[in-house]
Length: 144
Image 1 (cartoon, rainbow, N blue to C red):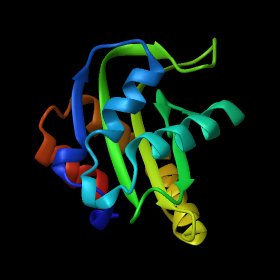
Image 2: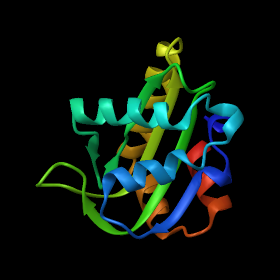
Image 3: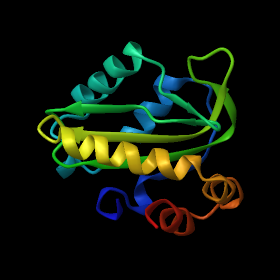
Image 4: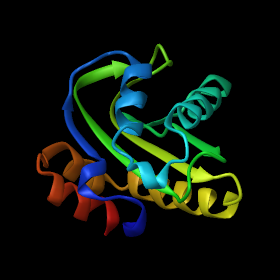
């Protein structure tokens, strides 16, 4: 996963309750050479988000999209200042992993989702996300 995220793709203490704004800010951290079209990729992620809620539990959401407008798999992480509802009235989120993969990389998409899901199930991983407030340290936690 280390090839898919860097410290520029980590957002800390994001203060908003607007899911669309969060996704947009996350996409804007992806460099232009990795995105063929930010707006169209944004639309693809929102389409997927409308299909099914991407809350996975443990205060985590994983909005994601396969898109012809992204050139290589990318992960963006955001840690919100406070928990917000992410489409499920019963569950709030504080940690968001945005995943984008090229349309032709369906296998990669599933692998990354599985790795992330496995990590999220680990209590120690979630504890580290909670207590860590430095991008470099969070990057290590995410890719280890």
